[in-house]
Image (cartoon, rainbow, N blue to C red):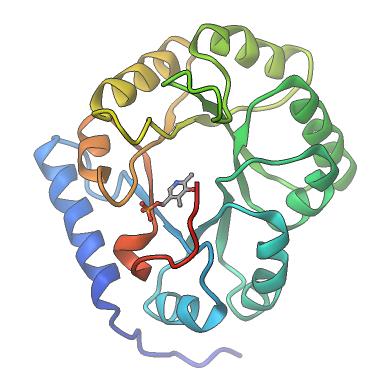
Length: 230
Ligand SMILES: *Cc1c(COP(=O)(O)O)cnc(C)c1O
C-alpha cells in the first residue's frame, strides 16, 4: 500500500504551470487543456525526482540510450509516469523505445513507421504517436517536409495501420516561432489530427495561443543544461 505523501513544492515547475494556466485563459482555451511535458534530458534522477515528488508525471527525453539508464527505476517508483520520446529514433532502437516510452513524438519516415507498427503489434503496448514536421525545412533537422505531411499521415494510417495522435515541430531557432505554429496547426486540422506538440521554454505561451495541446519545457523547469543539445 502506498502511503499518502504530501506533495513537495518545486518553484520553477509551479511557475511554468501558472504561466500555462494564464496562457490558456488569454487564448480562451479550457483550463488544463495543455499538457506539460517536462524535458529532463541530460539531468540525472536526483534532479528529476523533485519534479516527480511535486506531483508531475509527464516527462520528455530525446535519447533512448540515456532514458534506459534512468527511467526504468523511476517508472518502478512512479508507475503512472507518462514518458515521451522527443528526439530522433533509429529503427534499431524501436524495440527499446516501444518498451519504455508511452508516447513517441518523432515519427518521420516510412521505414520507422513500419518498424513501430510491427513492434506495437508484437508487444500489444499502447504507444501514442506524433509525426514530427520540419516546418522550417532545415536540412540538418529531422521531420517530414511540410509538402509530404498529408501523404505520410495517409500512409501511416492505411499502409501501416497506425493511429496518429498529432503533429510535433521544432521551429528554427533563428526565426519567430508563430508562423511555424500556425502552419503545424493548419496541417493537423486538414488531416483530422487533434494533438499539437509545440512550444519550448522560450515560446510555450505563444504556442498555446496557436493551439498547442502539449508544450515541451526543459530549461525553465530544470535550469540550463551544461551539455549542448539540438
Ligand atoms: C530540449 C528540447 C526541448 C526543451 O527545450 P527548452 O528550451 O530547454 O525548454 C523541447 N523539445 C525538444 C524536441 C527538445 O529536444
